[in-house]
Amino acid sequence: MSDNCRFADTNVLIYTVDCDSRKKPIAIQLLLKKPIISIQVVNECTNVLRKKFQLDYTRIAEIMDNYLKTVTVVPITIQTVTLAWEMGEKYNYSYYDSLIIASALENECTILYSEDLHHGQVIEERLRIVNPFSSKKEDSRKN
Image (cartoon, rainbow, N blue to C red; front, side, top):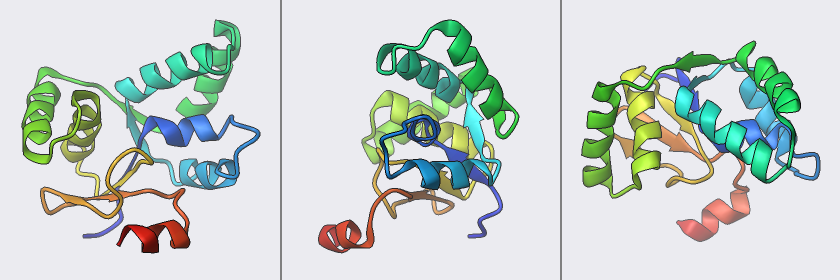
């Protein structure tokens, strides 16, 4: 598998604005790689910025505009939804996680950056899930 196409889950974007997080510099570096995100990630990010960070929509729009200069946003279609159902059934992920996986697969990504999925898992023999925020110590405890 080559690393020519990367997909970023919502948490990558969120950590770029979380000033208290050790994860912020990692997230910023990932965004500089110009990943793909889906419109679902835009929606989830907006929701977190509003609820958790209690930002107004003007500030959210500024933040999202900065993301949109760096990432490529892809739509979700009925084909994406259908693939998500298949992936959810096959890999036992929630619907929304399966929708992220389906979007990454549809866009021929080889890496999916996510803190919420199974680090190291390979989906459909072509999409590797990478938790860029886990430490080596945490990884060795999981294995």
